[in-house]
Length: 443
Image (tube, rainbow, N blue to C red; front, top):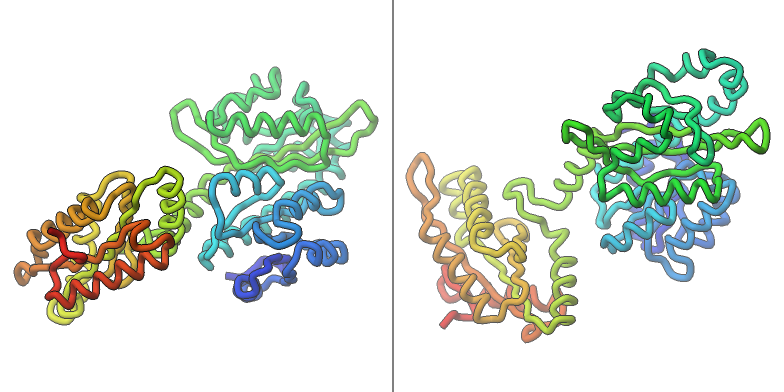
């Protein structure tokens, strides 16, 4: 993967390992990388040379990522620089706070190399395109005012992105190119009569946020505004993802504030990002969640259990003699055995439970609000179901069994590491007892 040109990216993170790893990835991409371990130092470096993109850790000592992003967006010189957050803490509150502070993206730690590089490359390309467009818009302002069929129209009426020139108060639509009809799926005539009619196509979950952003832009009249990505619901029920940015055109007089808005269909990019995100968080063989999500989910459930006074159970499940299955019947048989076990887990657990592929032939199941007795019953059901369902191969049926270790919060521990350690100890004991059993023993 190579960058089109040598963009400059600043990475701000107080975690030296993450900083070094991401810097290495970006250098491989051919980017000019600058690093900082603090927000204060980052501000000094940015003041010396403006980067094309800033990758920013959410949590840092002294000045956190949100405060730094707000400082950057409040400064005339830096407000146009896209900011991407990375964080191990990525609940909806954190993501919303980051986007509201002006960020363009939020990536979860530990990040997947292919995913984060794809996102960075997309934002750099978009930044380059919008900067070029902004220069062109200012250069052709006079040409546009002189003739509605002038250079500006010839420049953009055939492109795929929607370009519109609208008054700062959104009361008058001065120009919209033909791409509006293909992206929004409706005639632009209504838009000319009612400039805010485009909002009617927004998905209900996105409409309020976008309206608030537009209203804030009307009040504050910023030089640039970047709307959060939003969804359009077309008349046939299909959905599109759209990215929109607005740029203030220097007015010829004080009573003629105008904005150039650019809206781009990013549905394909969103689909690719969702696929990357799925692959980063799920085991490709079984479709279960992978180990990266396990610790966070357990800690989250512990917090919820503590708040409501509930118990929480954790099962570690291991396929017995798995190496023998691979050696005797081939690795395809081993893969089939793992998929069969994953199917049993999905079948036997509730909607509020979670199953993970822990690694190799080991799986973990989280059972919220389950006591030890209840967890042992679930584990026993899983064990019996697996042993009663031979693996069907061309050469004949192969019997598969599992050993299961169980631990429970709060009796066995009040944290992820302790619960896993106790369950793993019980799993080892199950193997010592001859395998194909649950430990602690179910009475």
